[in-house]
Image: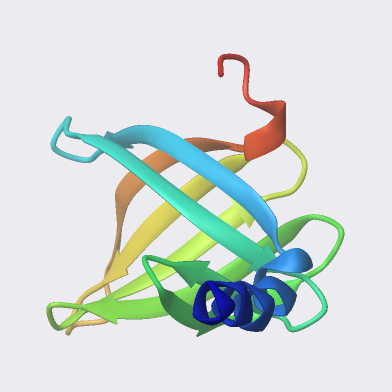
Length: 113
């Protein structure tokens, strides 16, 4: 019991200041994409699937970050105005292509629970 309590106490400060955001939409090949992220405004970080990503832009209009997966560079732009998340691929030649377009909401404000 003590171990569970200590684990909970150790993890709680990490998540207590996070805003949980859920996103869903389509990829550029029509596939369904659903992600959940935690936005740490004070730390200027986002957590997706247990990985932390530094926020590169955080202003009253948008939050932006980049990541690499399977050798592909992604730029992610989350609008604070309408909740849209645009995922853009940067290829080796410097070309950019839209990979996915998602709609995001704060998890506690989702329409269905």
